[in-house]
Length: 214
Image (cartoon, rainbow, N blue to C red; front, side, top):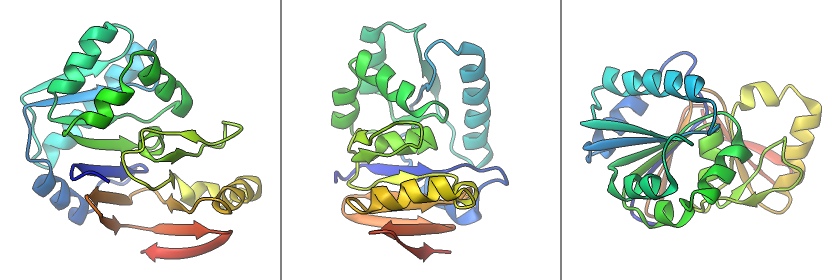
């Protein structure tokens, strides 16, 4: 794990816990530029809508950036790599998990993201892709993610734990690699070798589900 600040989120349907907002204010110290990485390169309307909402979400908690950019197929690969290298904070958006990773790979963003010292935040699909091994129910087999931290996550566990087939898939994955199941409203923060968990999160290891943060 590097010394950069990483944040893994599931979703915030009911808003941010005050403790999570405070941690973001403390930890995101570089605020020159915020760069969103889309999950659908051609879904411009939806991407712009959520980027605008997410930027407002930052501003509401007192984290304001001087500039904001969105990376999708309206930006050339060369310009996208320049923005990744120049940004203060990267935000990997939610949506189509594998399509987002394929976009980053096709645009040559994987290594620039790994080498960047910027803070990286991932929401849902973005959080999955930040992990060492990315697990998603719609992908037949796990794949190597960005490996920004040596953990794997599955978001929206408050929904998926009521689905026997999905729970069985998560348990099966955990036989070879532990995974953190995040309920909406929770967050995992990583800096260096330190991991902090806030909200309702479960660790699933060899099929055993254990609450680690409630």
